[in-house]
Image (cartoon, rainbow, N blue to C red; front, side, top):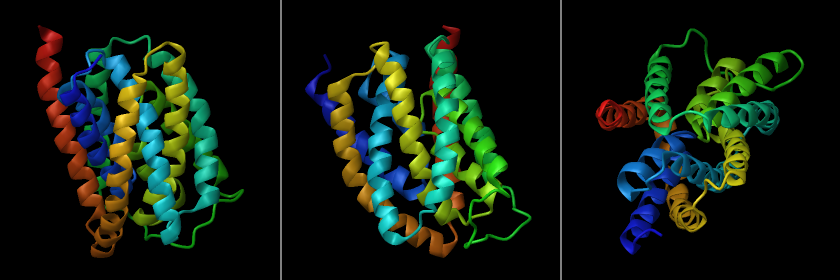
Length: 260
């Protein structure tokens, strides 16, 4: 059992995760896993991963409602992406449970750095706000969805920080639409991964409940901030900056622990 202070820290961490999810459509598990391990003090990396997957899925659903009200969700694209990704998440999470927890966290941090760098690269094409997912781009959308789902399940994450660039690359939709649409897949991937971990007894249910409660409040504030940053053209930079900061911290904490 965790101490009362740890549950308070979990609620505050959940608020930060919910805010980030609604703000940039990703970063939920990027923050949730290290917060559970390093701040809340969950002793098992695998329990932290399984619990965060459940919490992020619930917080993503809250953020999705807020984005849907703002009209920034491409439902068909999100549904196609999520359907393919669930299959990948199931396979990835099965493999991830067999990998040492500390090694998994370090691989996670390195992947974050790569994705953050790719997000900052200038795109050669213009945004297509009216993009639709159909037979023409379905293979590309489904392919990106399956690949993202596999990474999501392997690292026990909602995968938004992969889904957002995946949606942009496969459809050309604007960042704000990719953020809103990604939450469909984030929720689906998180539920798939959480169920797999739950079957192995790797979820702390009371901790997940506290984390989710904090995330609901944070999600409401994040969706408002996200629309303002998108209008100012700063959303991509904020997205990448969060990734780099957390990845650096995870490497700083994880490498000495692995070598000890």
